Length: 140
Ligand code: DAT
Ligand code: MG
Image (cartoon, rainbow, N blue to C red; front, side):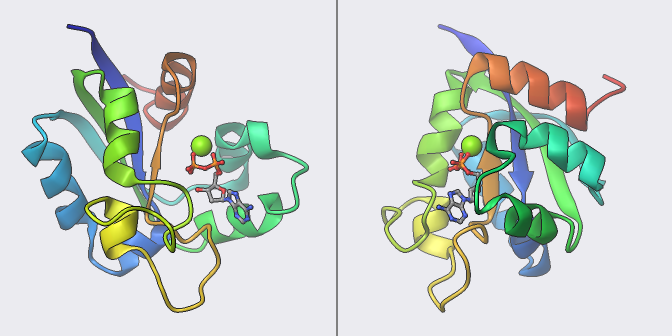
């Protein structure tokens, strides 16, 4: 086994739509462990660090504006191969084409909103997970 920790964010659309519980239910049903959880109003500094790989891309500014638009729920989640496993639960980036059975495929918008409103973030590698967990859980 390979126990890992990952950062999961319920984005402002997920919090506003009261989907935090449903998303956590899916994480727990899969057998992953919730280690820590916070409600965060993210500022530009945090978001710029979090999305540093996307700085300068055309979707960067709308993405940061969206992520600042309301509270986000940050979760530290542990489990065997959870980094890849949570991204599989989340589905692909665009909710329109994300597979049924996934968070984005089942719950993601299908009414003309921008692709950044895709409910969740999950770290994409062990290096990203370590970096992002340090940003969102600075005290632990
Ligand atoms: P993911 O969240 O699936 O890891 P990513 O890291 O490539 O995707 O991008 C981060 C977020 O930016 C993504 O959740 C939604 C937004 N985004 C990505 N590509 C986009 C695009 N082509 N147009 C608009 N927003 C985009
Ligand atoms: Mg990503």
